[in-house]
Length: 76
Image (cartoon, rainbow, N blue to C red; front, side, top):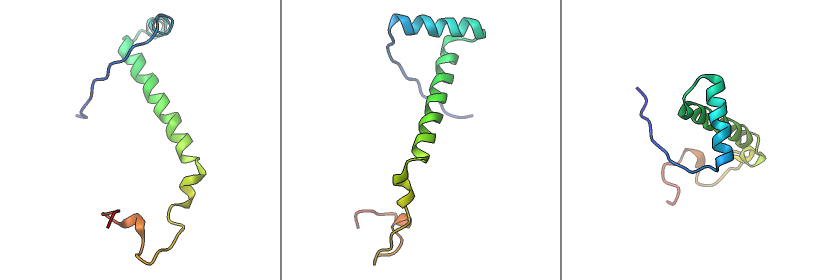
């Protein structure tokens, strides 16, 4: 079984009411709706990171010290 962590945050009354409305509409608990929303947010962020051109340079440079992407100690 996967370990879980508990998080806590505050939301304004308007957002809380909308989340409650979604939970009632879907017949799910509020915490399930919030968890699903967080999962969707993370998926969206992962897609943005994957499309960031900065990550295209990884592995495109050669160094005298060898392949830095395979190093265990970066400050050595």
